[in-house]
Amino acid sequence: MSGTISTFGRSLSHKQRALTVSSPRLFDKSVSSPRFSRKSEVSRLFCVLIALGSAVSFFLAIGGGYLYVLPNLTKASHEEDVGLSFNGSDSFCDIFDGKWVVDNSYPLYNASECPFVEKGFNCLANGRTNDDYLKWRWKPRNCEIPRFDVHNLLEILRNKRIVFVGDSMSRTQWESLICLLMTGVQDKGSVYEVNGNKITKVIRFLGVRFSSFNFTVEFYRSVFLVQHNWSSKYGIKRVRSTLKLDKLDDISNEWINADVLIFNSGQWWVPGKLFGVGCYFQLNNTLKLGMSIPTAFRTALETWASWIDTKINPNRTRVFFRTFEPSHWSNLTLRLCNVTNQPLSETKGQESNTFSDAALEVARGMKVPVTVLRITPMSAFRKDSHVGIWSDNPSLSDCSHWCLPGVPDLWNEMVFSYLHRSYRHMPLHQQREFNSMD
Image (cartoon, rainbow, N blue to C red; front, side):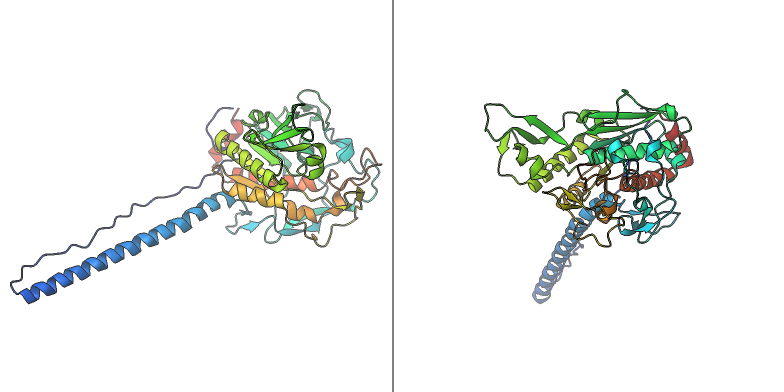
């Protein structure tokens, strides 16, 4: 894809001012009287001390200001998207601080009419009779998220490449976006999986092309983001495989030239999917048997962040990281799942999460701006929107994955709100050039 137009990139311009400090001039006066001479020397000494004291104070003030202001400017450059302004308003609001409200204009699509929804996520088709869970919209406390405009988004994405990287929750969001976009495409046959594959959880790459608009929406399965390797049979018996925390997934080169990158990770970072199956951590070719999961996750995110800062051009690629999605098991050990008919009235402590906090902290220290989609609190209310027993295998309950349509649609609406804002603030001639890029 050619052209140097900034796609969704953002930058913060820092103006530097030259500060010049000059010492006061001391004028010598010839005085014949010794008494006046001594007074003059004392006076000069006093002036010098005042000048030195003023200079030291000045530089301490400048240094303190530098130490205070610079980190906050850096922080601002990475957190500028926490607040968004809509409808031409200059006021900003946190779109992740809000509540769920009933909205009968939802859902935005019919899963049975979208060929890219996995059968296991189409809860209505799998026998769920209560559809109240489809009628909820996320309402930020101090603003409104722009209504999903499929035709506008199709134009924004024309000639682009959108890439999701992560686990099955990422694949669900990928399916959701495709179904949302298909509502604005007249010729449904013009939308197809590039390799003719059926949607399945075992394929590492899936790509759906919208040929009428010349863009693809891709999914790469990378549940840990870092490399997973099987161990030698001559190694420690209990160690069947390792995660190389300092090496990003070996398919990461496929992600580089995307226009929109949306990452997630967290669901697989649990003892049952790590230590329980003999998977441990490795750092600098050294096995770390005693490393905790939160520490390992943070280390993996720092590897991811270093890769982003090194490989990604922020003038082309807009990067998102979606935080951890809460599950709502009544008893995870016994796999008991009680799906409600309405959202919860309180989050019951699930509004925060160690993995989500780590993502926010790591993103703040990055050079390339990353928009962190803090969906953990909003999703914590939605015990009503899980798959439950309405999957393609009703003998297994599921309080981790989400029905489609459902909560992942709102995650995509948030992504759209950022892309819409970036596009809307482009000059008209840049919008035309942006849409014509190939």
